[in-house]
Length: 171
Length: 159
Image 1 (spheres, each protein chain N blue to C red):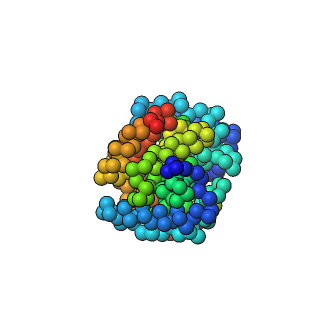
Image 2: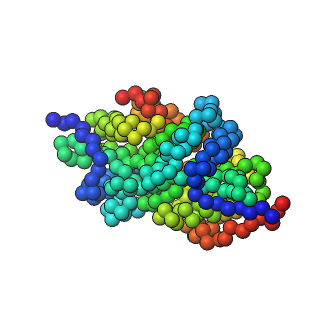
Image 3: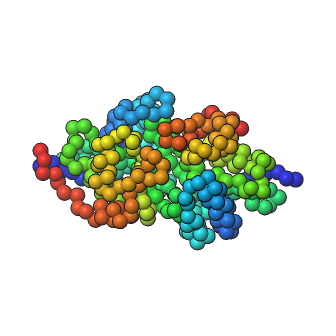
């Protein structure tokens, strides 16, 4: 049985996190040419820790090994007068798929949202990415005003935040 | 002198900022979009206008009278591996238009970004907002047309 755990990134995780970031960058389309080498351990160390950090990272492990991550930062929606968390990256390593890692990361994001005092979580997903949209929809997320942005209403966040991360019964 | 002065908004600017935010909402409604006036002075003071706030504001004044504002918060672009400023609002009061207020606000945001080691500023714009799009293109911004998100790499900023 595989044991899935999610926790805040530690300095020792940074090399594995950078590898996963580069994997994600290789798979997504960006303006200009995707250049996975731009993100480095030095940049993650400089920007991802401490009170003044520019982003936070949650790391998922399967049987103790890094298997995915969620990168987030604070934001604000003036129209809604709402503190929000932006989920910039959500990644599960190919070899760790179908173990509940994505779900565990989103549950941890929900707890992070409450811890940070934010009301909503927002993120972008390509309208053609049916798998991702189905996954997020199953968590109660909805499409937001802007075409490719999704948001997670606070009732659904509350539900996910209190769900316990259970070890997957697969494999 | 009628020069535009831009400075970080202080707590005592809260009421004036909320009025301008409502002004922006009126213009958004005039473009045909639904938006409610949820921000209040109390909420703005709770969430911003302080160190480590959730929302930060630069206010523009002409002869000590409010003329506009830019609201922003911090982000990060993992693909480009750069710090980002996200511009939540850019607004010029109708009475202060065509006096360089928007340029002054963007220039101040770019300068602030450079101080913070930021690589790009990112924001949304409604595709029907032709004057805004023309202004943004003049200053060197580009569009991610699929997402209606604009970005300005600070190295490409045209003052």
